[in-house]
Length: 121
Image (spheres, rainbow, N blue to C red):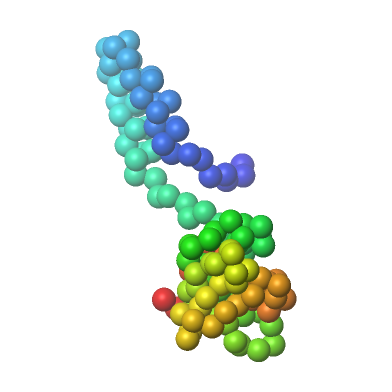
């Protein structure tokens, strides 16, 4: 059986709908419902994928921080945090606030919504 992520909050809401007087009158059903509710709340959350942003997503993030990494032969841009400036078609890195232009996106650098796992903070 393949593993797939689920929305625990949605499942918890459905499970609470089953919490009725009829279920509570049955000792076994009540115990089972309590156990399932406990299991749902105790499940670890899954971290959403942190794929590189598309250029379209990046252009929509005016004023927001992104984590950038170099993918070109030179290490000019990152890794590091930057702020997107849509009007100027660039992001500004914390490294001397140097500009990183959209036109080089995907060739020399990539941006992520958050720090990729395994990167230094």
